[in-house]
Length: 53
Image (cartoon, rainbow, N blue to C red; front, side, top):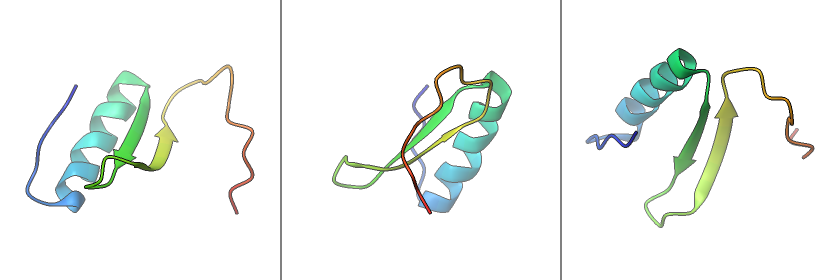
């Protein structure tokens, strides 16, 4: 699902709600289209192995 909002704050609120409801992953993109962050809201059988601190 794709939703366009006026602010990033609004987009994050909507995206987080949808991802939790569907137990899916939320991918956050910047204006340049590059991935800024990802959050999983479900049982991920293959969790990421990166070391974010």
